[in-house]
Image 1 (cartoon, rainbow, N blue to C red):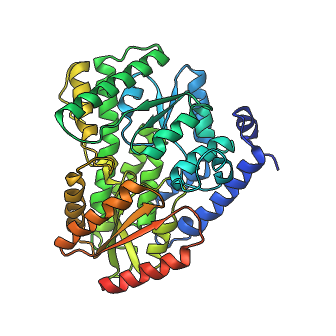
Image 2 (spheres, rainbow, N blue to C red):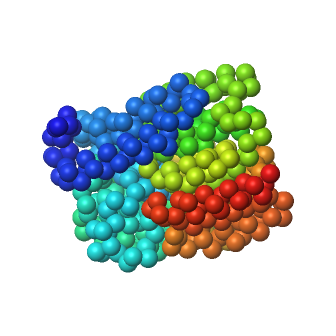
Length: 424
């Protein structure tokens, strides 16, 4: 039966049959992992709707915005300052990179031992599966790892790409480099939109993105309660959707959900039995629909109470100072805020070690699971330092390395169950 969005998807040059198969798998996966949960918040109905329309209504909104003269910028990383895109009247969206459905096409141009996230975004493009990628006027890459850096060279053969160089250290000279990259991105966006970013438009954009960060910070505070009032799977979903939903609508809806969450906390209501082991996830980001490990953890007698990742506190922890009155002052504030991101690309990365330990203590976790994508060297190597830092604080850690396939689910379940038992 024809889908009401088929004409739009066809205009975007999607492979309609393959795309239909992707949506079918996504729907089943979502139903099994999210919709089947007991005791979900009423506010999650909005997130359910967003996922049901993930390639429909939101893509239609993007097409309407483009028709009205706005540009759409796609990104794969939290280093790209959305405030600049919004200040120029554009829209920024995170791009699909959480499924292996396009791997066969990706491996025609990438080595097999490339991390799943990189293979996923290249595969989605080559297999013509992602309407977000096809809606973008510009895709912004970044040099957070060698794999991504070289993959963008291939990606640029198929889509317009602008790459931002991320410093690898945090010395004064590195800040100078990063500021030049932020200014270069600002110039690129202004050139594409034909609009000069003003002090007022940048001030408004900073306030808007800070508002979204604040509501997600509130969510994190509320979910830290005992008993745990929301599953880790649902909290992760909220964070994932924040990357592509309309920021004004998203902030309002999650604010309402937090109000409901606050009532649940006040009433002492939880979504898991008393005594359920509290775990924290740390490490690599998890893009939609990468829900495998959270599902394994929460079906193994534990609940996830926080994520130390780019789809978590690394994206929401720091605000941009709103005291600037000129474009120059606000650019400096943006540079400062984004340089505080503690990605594993940095060396040394003592900030991350301190943040992991502090977060684990604040959340009163029984243990930390460090998640690394196969062949992701920065996070895999840094896991050694993270485990050492947590060990000094008396906190247990399990290091897991996996990809997007479902082949290792039983093996992962066995390891996680043993870890949960050990923390009891």
